[in-house]
Length: 354
Ligand code: AOF
Ligand code: ZN
Image (cartoon, rainbow, N blue to C red; front, side, top):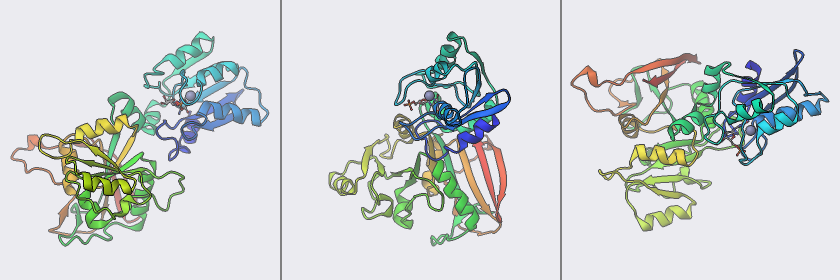
């Protein structure tokens, strides 16, 4: 199963909106087939592993398959993996976790059992859940797993008040940040950041065939229509105010406008998270300024912080998160440190909201 998880990771950047799954076929202690999920519409991990075994000239009849997610039982873009495993004559299937997709949800294992295949579910569950934290979030909560990235000095400052911010963290930390962008289905920022820094919000320096979708929260549709984040098209602009002329300009740049106002004339952020779930966004990577960051946190839309902290002090400067002043500690937001690591000279902290 460890090897299967290792294989699943090879699909890290390519399977979206499908989960990243790995499969290993073993017979008599020998690995005879390996596979991982291909881009949506192409083969699932199990089918890849069966093909691999065939290519190696190995007999899979009577073998055991280790899969990091319950094999599917439905006709989606591809036929059911459970049927393929049954047809191949496997004796045993071990899954790390079940697939919460309502189209599967236990029926994959049930189908295998009904065909006389011995099944086990629940091996290296924690690791398997982490691998597909976004897919599981979308299936179970209807919204993406939201990871908010920020880079700051050790005193938590992202930029000077005059806007100067290049570069607080090291090139190693910045490159690491691109790896997290690459695995996300979409990258979200605000129009303030777009108009001030003109970021491309693309993945660079990582070997990936897929660029995440870019999303801009822009309540008043203030985005500069020449912004680089619109380059290449496909950017979603989420607004609270219809503005036909501006919308036409943005559509010329192949952007899509999503209107989601709340009662205060701002974008309804929780509704946006539901909408992104509906649009099959599994992992959402947020790189925004302190105001949008603070609003997303205050609205309970953030699951995890990905923070790079440099060993420097900036003093009176811009904060990572603009959150309301508290009068009582009861109002604080608690997190747990999921992982802390040093990246070059900087610290990388993954902290999860409780
Ligand atoms: C598997 N093995 O490697 C993956 C699975 O539209 P389709 O046919 O590609 O089906 C997508 C669904 O299949 C996806 O939502 C999830 O439930 C499951 N993904 N299942 O047996 C795999 N990636
Ligand atoms: Zn499948």
